[in-house]
Amino acid sequence: MVKNSFISVISQEEKNENKESVEFQIVSFTNKIRRLTSHLELHRKDYSSQRGLRKILGKRQRSLSYLAKKKRVRYKELISRLDIRESKIR
Figure 1 (spheres, rainbow, N blue to C red):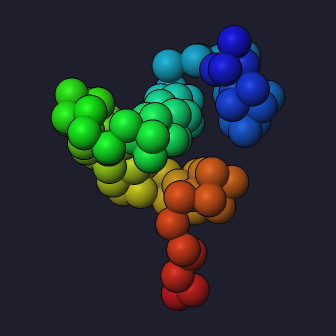
Figure 2: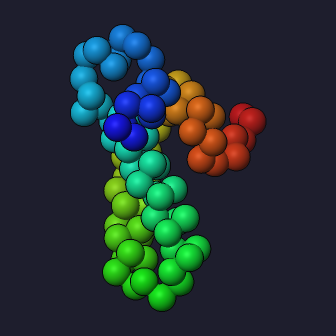
């Protein structure tokens, strides 16, 4: 349900090829991170959710570093679409 709205971020040809691509996983992790962040704003002492958030952040970071090494152009596109980081001009 929620995944379908974020699949549109990924290009149509990749959506048809493989839903378990690195880009799709990063989008999925980002969705979970945003949901947990909004949950933790209301429930500050929910330490289990804080731990889960840290684990998902680590997984997304590893996936992003992999994507940055393998497909630099796709990495930059995904970062700008998801508005994860400030883009550095090089």
